View 1 (tube, rainbow, N blue to C red):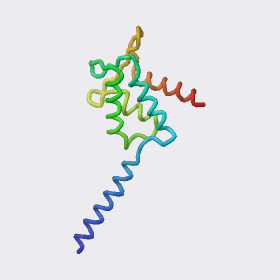
View 2: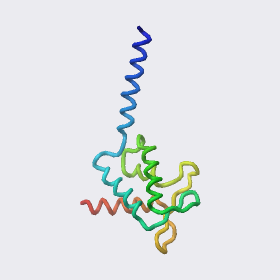
View 3: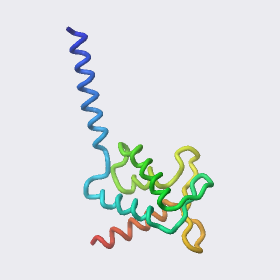
View 4: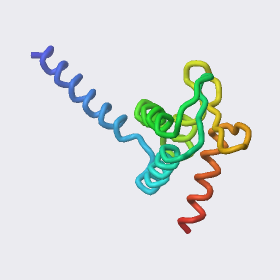
Length: 124
């Protein structure tokens, strides 16, 4: 009987803690910002460089979405979304670079933060 109660308590605590972790994410008020940034990346004509390989916006957005899903329990702001999902390789630590038109490379963190700033100004 004690073993059965212990098992149920374990299951209940896993459910409660698992649910709390699953709820971590940007607040509802910032979700449109994250969605905008993902659409911005996906639709860009710029090229992304990740660990020496270049990708178009659609492939870069897929990668950022995967990282966002993986790190969602650590992300509580749009800025953290950028930091965890769109700035650097988790494996090598190298920053992601973005190449637009004839401009030299810019770190993706700078590029995404600039777009977030513009988006927020346009929402006022």
